[in-house]
Image (cartoon, rainbow, N blue to C red; front, side, top):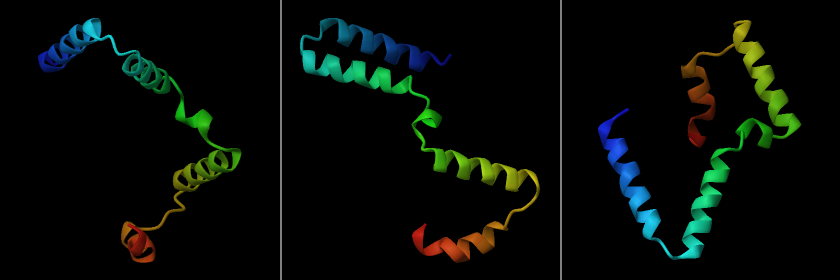
Length: 77
């Protein structure tokens, strides 16, 4: 692992060990807990079905060139 990331972790641990603001601690806990959530489980059935259909289409070669899609959806990108 990168030494720089290790240094950042140590800095955070040191800072956290001196922290007395409970609201910040709660925010950190919420952030940690949100990282545990599998985004797939947050999707609706319709969204999951749409993604699965897209994967099946791509696997079977039923795709469009990027240039065609860009022309069609370019104004939203």
